[in-house]
Each structure stands twice: as structure tokens, then as C-alpha cells.
Image 1 (cartoon, helix red, strand yellow):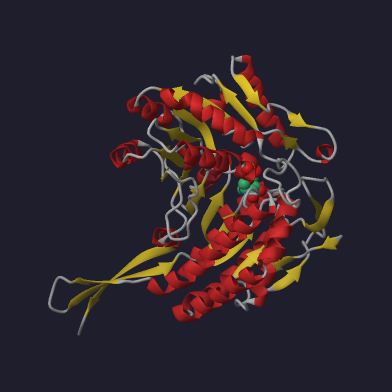
Image 2 (tube, helix red, strand yellow):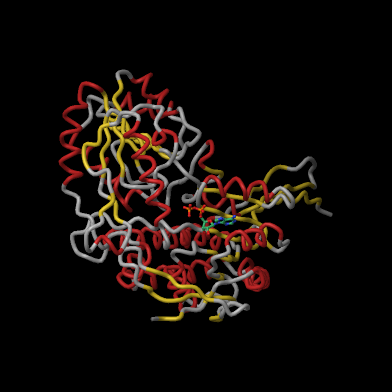
Length: 481
Ligand code: ADP
């Protein structure tokens, strides 16, 4: 069993308090290793290191920053298999999904390695013959990043890539459940020879205390958070004191809408992928499947057959489609949604229970579940389930489904399946969501602005848009002699 250390100022260190905690495999309960359990003192040391490194990194010519980032990209790509394996072990998702995650995350580093060379300024006419107005863009400073367990690798690269490109330095606090992927990236940061303090990674079980330090330490300029809407709101409240810059990627409640003119086989394939990827533990996964009445029966038949064919198991086993849920708490939430739906009249077409026989008894495995006769008053229609449960609803008209899809406090991702271009445009524009997949369910692209409206977040990650939150404008009004 390996005892990992955390990375501060390009040095492997223990927590100042000497504490450690165990990381377990959610598929088997096996202890994978131990990591330092950092306290506030360690967060301060990491912030100090990032603060000292800021002048070095931010003033480095963009071309050199770009090269350093590309070295990091290349190292991640060279180690994809090892990183994916570790990710599956600590998080549970099938190996092929873990691989796809690592590669997608690496592509953010690659893309922003280029984008760092395109941080342009402006030259604006001044008010006299002698005046010149320049607008330059400068990095905000030290960025504190807090990331979740559902994408232990790409949630980190998605934050550090634009931050580093902008010229910021970073302190990352990964989720306590999945620190090993973070520390594996830390190893590559060292190998890529990023200057000391540019990326620091601290592992901890005490997120509230570290979060508080991030909010109150004046050396931290910005907080970038991905996680629950509940914690996101706490951080926004806490940021008021120092008007700390905050970017948030929060929960979602994605509608997945299938119109009567859709390619049903395509819709089924994407509905299964969107709903059951990562055992339904993604913020953009289909949470409400709306099918137009006239094709409902045909869709349900095909969908059900596809869901019944999914293989649940250890993510490391070839052929596994769905791994375990992250922990007991996750199971309780899923179970409470299914029980509530059942008690209000939903029909369970498949699944609807935990898998308890061997080898499932060592982890938290839930049978892929399809619910029909779902009504809008059910808990599953209001809250994010974060599990492998697909509630199916039917609708008659475009106007009706738009209204029902928008009837939520969330606004992250929505999906529509139709062969009509006009309908795609009409419905796509009317949906109150930050992202709309049209005949497509994969939305994480380095070149596109990922993010939500309403209570799903603030700001975007990806694209040239994703650089904005890490930059400030400065305008200089210059009078010549
Ligand atoms: P989830 O319920 O999916 O674990 P959370 O929002 O609780 O989502 O967790 C996302 C990240 O936020 C994790 O890194 C977690 O440790 C961290 N976190 C949880 N509570 C707080 C808090 N009060 N302050 C700062 N970070 C927190």
C-alpha cells in the first residue's frame, strides 16, 4: 500500500499536522493507499508558494509558458493507461471512460497551451493628438481550485489549463474521495518542469476549513469551484467579504427531449450514454427523458432493451458498462428518489434496487433503472439524482415540453433529438440552459464554453471564453510628451 505525499512548491510534503487518511476503491472496498490530510497551515504554505511563483510565471513569455504546458500535455498522453487505471480504481468508472476522461482533460492543456499565445490587447483612439489608450489583459493572480470526485482528472486539468495559460498560479484541492489522480498529475507537473509553486496540490478531508482559508487569504485572487449547488452558494456568500472572484460549475437537471421526427436509434444510443455514463454521476447527465407521445412506445421498447444489456461491474473488468456509485450516501439518495417515485405511482420497468450478491456486495452497485409513468411532482423531477435512474415522461407539443424542461432552478445542459433544423433552432434558443446538445450528448470540448445559467453556475470553462475569468482588463490612458 502506497503512502502518497502532496505537492507544494515542487516538493513532496506531508501534512504539517502529520495526519493521513485512507483512499478506498468503491468497487471492492480495498484500501488503495494513504494521502496527507492537510490542514489550514498546509493550505497557507501552498498559497504562499503560488503567490511567490506568480511574478515568475505571469511574466514568462507566452511562448515559454506554452512550451511548458505542452510538455505537461505530452506527459499526460504518454501515461494515459496508468492514469486511467488509477482513476478507475479510486473512482469506479469503467476503464474506457477513465481513458476518455484523461484524454479529454489533457486536450484542455493542449488547447490552452496554444491559447496562451493569443491573449491580445487593444489600442483605442485617445481624446487628443497626444493621448493613446491601451487596454491590456493581466492574470488575476493566485487561483484556488476545488474539484469534485466524479471527474478526478479532467476537472483539474480543465481548471489549471486556462489558469496557467492566463499566467495565474494555482492551488488545487481535489475531492477527498479521489486524491490519487490529482497527485498523479502533480507528478507530471514536476516532470514537465513547471517552475516551483506554479501548481500546488493539497489533499484533505477538511474541505470547509480549507475553503474558508481560500476565501479569507488575501493572497488568493480567485476561486474556481466545481461541485454541488449547495456548496457553490456557500462559497459565493463567503466571497463577499473580499469580493473574491468566483467561477462555479454546479449541479444540473438535464432534460433529454426526443421529438417524433428523431432518429430513434441515435436517440436511444445517446440517451443510454448520457444517462448511464459514470453510473449517472455527472452534472450534465440526462435527468428527465421527455419523449413525444406518438413515438413513446417505440422509444421505450428500444431504450429498455439497451439498458437491460448494460453490464454492471468493477470498472477494471473488460466489458463493464457501469461501475459502482461513489459511496453509501450516493446510494441513499438514489434509493430515496426511486422509493418516492414508486410511492407516487411510477412504474419500474427495470432495475430499481441495489445489487447485493457477490461480487457486488463489496461496493455500492445499483441496477440500471428505467421509470415510466413519472409525474412532475416526484422528487426525481426536482432534484439531481446522480445515479443510474432514467425517468421517462411523455409530451404532446413543442411549447409544452419547452415549458416543462425550463421548469427547474437548474440550467446546465439540455438535449434535443430531431431531424428538423428549424425545430433545433427554435427549441435550442428557447431552452434556458448554458449548453444544448442537438442529436449529440457529449458536451465537454476544450474549444467550447462549458457552463450553466440559473443555479447551475457562473462563468464558463473551455474556449477562449474560458480564459476570461482568469484575466482582468487594465486600461492605460497615456499622454505623450
Ligand atoms: P459532492 O456532493 O458531489 O461531493 P460537494 O460540493 O460536496 O459535491 O464537493 C465538491 C468539492 O467541494 C469537493 O472537493 C469537496 O471536498 C468540496 N467541499 C465540500 N464542502 C465544502 C466547503 N464547505 N467549502 C469548500 N469546499 C467544500
